[in-house]
Image (cartoon, rainbow, N blue to C red; front, side):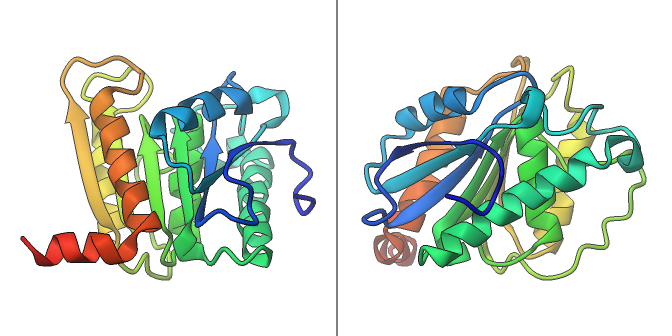
Length: 221
């Protein structure tokens, strides 16, 4: 991986034999290696996992609810790093529908914002304790279509960092962009990831890795 200057931690299947790839974006103050620990829980041996490390362990300096210009140029640089990694995977024969974007907290916000600004059919887009970036009233006139991409949003109803209203807004916006959104709100949960979210991610990965079996399962209901 040479297109992006970010350090990339990797695990899972090597790209040469993987059926799909996941980009994992860590939260503020966290590490790429920590996201690979999470990837182990997904237990998908045919998936390649790639986790870029943010400079100084943060993708942008202020809250995701701050005016966007306050988080520049860091936000644009971080979005460009994700874009470079998606492009690098494309050069390795992973079409966007074989690429999963997953992030937690600040990384989840980055993943959702990237997908909205670059809407196309992805394997899946997963934002755990996350929402679209910008203050209340930010225009959401994104272009393109997610074209049925499975989008998983999971968050507590009392998360101190992610207002419930922003999760709901993100669901509306990503649905309007053509995303197949699964929103899971957990009463009283902290700023963390729970077993149900892990199950939702696993199910999304199975759909990417085995699209024909997923279609058969849908047809049987």
